[in-house]
Length: 320
Image (tube, rainbow, N blue to C red; front, side, top):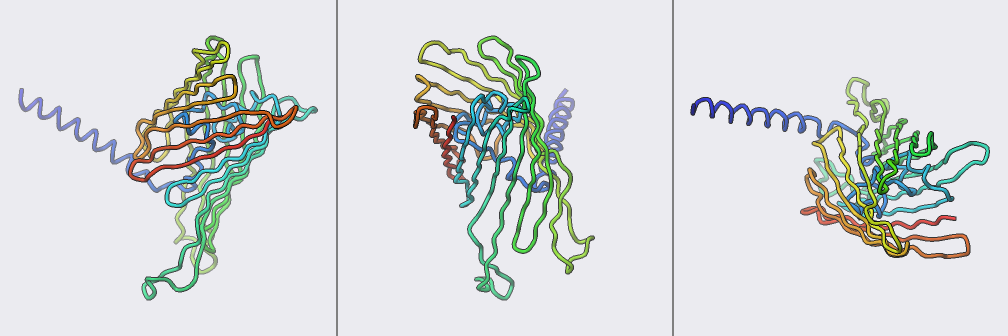
C-alpha cells in the first residue's frame, strides 16, 4: 500500500514537472510579445477582463467584433507607463462609412524605450555610441452585426520591430465575435489574436541565412463573459470574467467589475490569476460633455506588478 501511494505521488510529481517543463520550453520562443500587453485604462482597471465587454476604441486590441457596438465616431488615446521604463502608446479612430454597412477602425500602437549605450568586452562601461529598440503596429478593423445579437470582426495589422540596425516586418490578423444573450446584459466574447507566420531579423549581408533564428508570433486565444446585474436608474454594475491561453505560458483567469454612476463617475477593480507577477488592479473614470455633440472620458488605472512595482495607464477618448 505504501509503495502504491509512493508511486501515485511520484507519478503526480513527474506529470507536474513535465507540464512545467513544457511551459518553460515555450518561454522566450516568441517575438513581438508587446502584442500581448493590453491597452486601455478602463480594461486595466477591470483586471483586463474585457474580451466580452470591448465597447470602446480599445476593442481594436481586445475584440474586433466590439467596434460594431460603437454607434458614434470615437477617437481614443492610451498611455501606459510600463515596467522597466518602457512606454506604450495606443491610438484608435472608430468610424462608419455610409456606403458600407458595419463599423471601421484604424489604430496604431508602439512600445519604446530610452536609447541604450553600446558596450563590448573592451568597453564594458560603453563605447560612446547608443542604440534604440522598439515595436510598432498599425491595424485596420472591420466589424458588423450579422443578427441583432451576434457581431463579428477582423483586424489586419502591420507589425514592425527594430533593434539597432536590425529589423523585421510582418502581417498579423485578429478574428473576434460577440454574442448578446439578451438576459441581464450577458454577452459572450471570443477572439484569436496575432495570427501570423514566423519572423526573423534582417541582419544584413554580414550574417548568413543559416545563422538567423526565426521566431513565432504570440497567437493568443481569449474567451469571456460579461453581465450587468445592476442596470436601473443612475446606478449600473458591469461584471466580467475572462479566460486566456497564451502561447508561451500557462492559462490565465481574469475577473473584474465596473460601477457606474449616472454615466459620469466610474469605479473599477479586478484581479488576475495564474500570472507570474500581476495580481490586483483598480481604476477610476470621469465622463463629461465638452460641446453640444461631443463627450469626453478620462480613465486612470493602476496594475500591481508585485516585485516589478506597478504600471500606470491613462486613457482619453472623445465621441461625437
